[in-house]
Each structure stands twice: as structure tokens, then as C-alpha cells.
Length: 311
Image (tube, rainbow, N blue to C red):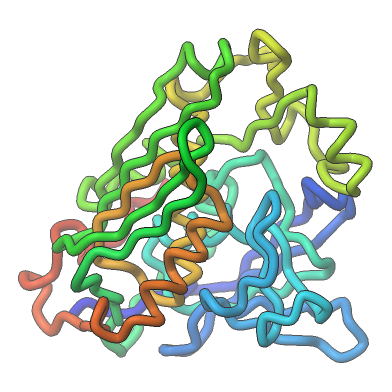
């Protein structure tokens, strides 16, 4: 049986929110089977639980934000996509995330620090079947036309693979890989995807900060790009780090579905908003998906039965 997974022990991290600039403490705790991933705002007078789901996403500007009952005016947790991506990469199903502010800490700007935290706590198999959302027919979201066209698509596939393409028309980005493919059957999320950092442009800094965004960003947690080049002294971690980070984000956004997908995802210039619309369109059509389990490991797609190797 492909089993659900949680943590063996509690682990903690302290950092700052990339947009708020506020210090935040994160405590990751084991959860019982079928709990899902639940964020808990413990800084409030009365703690508020926010279970992760596609319908809980209340804002997708610059990050994925969730709120109870999709209420944009209620308590919220912002910038959950990097942690969610790490959970997808390690196959985690059940987890409590206690948080002391409204934004997940950016740490090093990638998912690698979260992978390290989660693996340090240990991954535990649980006595319950892992439930997957299997896509049965193609679902697509398209937006814009011509140079502004963006799209994202889910199609049936016995496994989980993703392909992402960017087109920024910027010399620093154009000099790197524009398209990346990743198949979860490889078992190499940690090596090939997790270390890709978020990126930003100097020309956007003043506009973002005027809107109260990017206040915690710096060259320790963001790839900073001016009109021509990458400003970080150490350069890039991957030759195609920009597009790999967009794929990392997409993995996190799609894990907000609440269960891992069995699907092929392809996207062109997609982002948090389009990814969430794609999930909502899928889940709104009962003929487009089914929830499945695997009693025999041999019946599951390659790579889904094995735990990710420790660091």
C-alpha cells in the first residue's frame, strides 16, 4: 500500500517574510492521517486554523495566500508556495504549520531550506492509504493574446510530470534556459528543483515597496537582476535557475489541491493566479478527476513508493 506521510518529530525555523519584512517563527508538527496540511496562526488572540485547499486561496498577487473560507479580509497566511513545494517533493500529506505572523519566512528564497527542515524532523509512514487526485481529461486555462498570452494545462498521465516555459525578453534571463521539464519518477526534486531561488528586478523595487511588498527581500534570499545582469556575487545555482524557480512555484501551487496529483502539467508564463484557476477548474468538474489509492506498490507510478533519500 502507498501510505500517507507525516513528520516523525517537531522542527522549527525563524526568518523574515520576503514581502512584509517581519520576523516570523515557524513550527512544523506531525499530524494524524487524513488531516492534510493545516496552517495555524498562533499569534492571534484566538488561534485560527487554515486548512490548505484550492478554494482557500484568497490572493495570488506575487505569492499564494490562503484564508479561512477564502475570506480576503480574514486571517491569512501568505507566500506558502515554497513550503508547499517542499512538501510535494517529499510526498508529505499531513502536517501542522504553526506560524507567528501572516507570512511564511522566505529563508534562502528557495525550497531547499524547507526540505532540510522536514527531512531533519524525519518522514514517517502512516497506517492509511495515500490519496491521489488522478486527472481523467485535459483541463486548460488561457489568458491574454499575442505577447501577453499565458496558459497552463493538466492532462492525464500515470505519474506526475511538469514542463514550464518562460519568456521575459530580458538579456540576463534570455541567456539561461527558458524551458524545463521534471518528472517526479526521477526522485530528484531535492537535487534538480529545490535549490532554485525566487528572483526580482531592480526596476520593480520602488513600485513593490510602495505597495508594501518586497520589504524583506535582499541578495541573501532573492536573485536580483538589473537591466542587464544578475547582481548576486555568487551567480546562479543552476544554468536555468529562473525557469526552475517558476516550476518550483507551480509544484507548490498545485500541492494546494490538498492531495498529490497524477497528471501532466504544462505551462507557458503561468503564475500563482493561473495555477489556482487551473486547480479550481479541475476540481469543479467531477468528470475531470477521481481520487485513487494504490493497495499494491507495483500499481503506483514509478517513484511514488520510495521515501526521498535523507540529506
